[in-house]
Amino acid sequence: MKKQAENISDNMTYIIAEMACSHEGDPELALKIIDGAGRAGADAIQFQIWFLPEMVVPHHKDYKLLSKIELSQMQWQNLVEYTRDKYPGMDIIACVYETKSIDFAMTMDVDAFKIHSADLSNPLFINHVAQTGKRIDLSVGASTLDEIQNAIEWIRNVSKKVSIWLMYGYQIFPTPTEAINLNFLKKIKQLFELPIGYQDHSDGDSEAGFWLPAVAVGMQVDCLEKHITHDRSLKGIDHQAALNPDEFKKFVTMVRELDIAKGISVPKPFLSQELIYRKNSKKSIVVSRDIKKDTVIKESDLHYMRADELGLPPDQAYRVIGRKIRHDINHYSLIKEEDVK
Image (cartoon, rainbow, N blue to C red):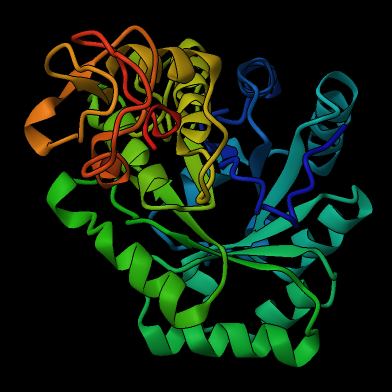
């Protein structure tokens, strides 16, 4: 059963496996990446779908490369069908760049759309995505607060019900650690009161690719987007910040451990092991000498020590000081309120 992505208050971080262009235009490589994401337990896989003639001018420096790696609509349909058949619990997110691809993605009933930060000032495009009614992951890297606010307002002008997630990350591959500025995540969430995600583009060969998302989880992000590739050592397209499938599985395992560790914000009943710890470690009030019946208990008659069971804690000494003992009591014995008159 699919995770209910619209409700991310269940304390679990929503993990997006970003394929980007690491398929290199080869559907077989795309299948390997899908398998890597699905077996790792990602909540979603993100496909970058575009129609080149409507996205980039022919004289753009990347046009030739993009034309080589562009997948056809039939190929995308096959990949979506494969994903749904083999990993029905994994959402499919379409990162789109022009209206033709929005309409095409809707024919496949994708679960959500990502709007790249390049389109944050493109109201016609944003309106077209908003009209689908699907969740929108709004990438806000390299954008001003005004640009973010305007994009949100354009979406809300179309629909008050569309779910909006703000995705923060630097579009530098790999991103130097000093540029990331994770504290800004908290400010964005505070300002716009929307779910926030962290797009990690740290060097895939660096441990920072694990540490920094772990810090983001600790800062209560709702979502993590992480690049995945088939084999980073081949240094193909979009490999710099991507994890190999086995590494991505370790990444998901790490995040799930962190999710468990976050717990809840209210006190929980003590675990059985904690009760044993309290019994063996918490200090109780014991008498500091043999005391005879009818002796008035003084502060000097008491010690605060670990005992074989829990008695009155030290801060409850006032309950027995100044009162007479009902019966003889031996040195190091617990003293309880029922032992005094």
